Length: 97
Image 1: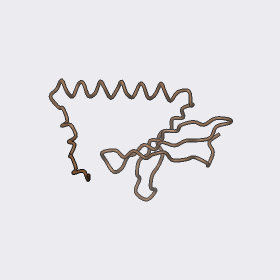
Image 2 (image 1 turned 120 degrees about the vertical axis):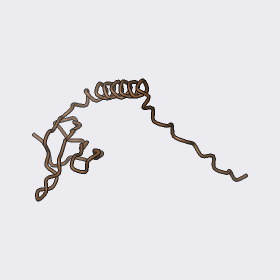
Image 3 (image 1 turned 180 degrees about the horizontal axis):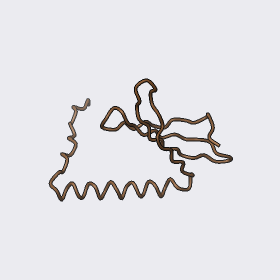
Image 4 (image 1 turned 180 degrees about the vertical axis):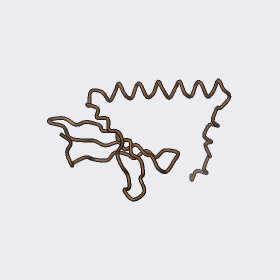
C-alpha cells in the first residue's frame, strides 16, 4: 500500500507546461521503491496523476541501462539524419597565480 512518506527526487517538465513526470522514492516493507508518475495539468484541479509505475530497487539498474540504450539510439538516428546538436563550448577563464 502506498505511503504518505514519499520523497520527491525530481520533477521532469515536458516541452508543454501541461505535462510532467515525477520521480519519487517510496518506502515499501523493508525496502524502497522508485515511483514514476505521469501527471497532467487540469484547470481548476491542478496536477492530476494519470499513470503510476512502481519499480523495485532491483529493477533500477536494468531501467538505467534500457534508458541509456534508448538515448544512444535516438542520438545515432539524429546524427544520421544530420540533426546533430552543437557540442557545448568550454570557456577558459583566467587563472590567478
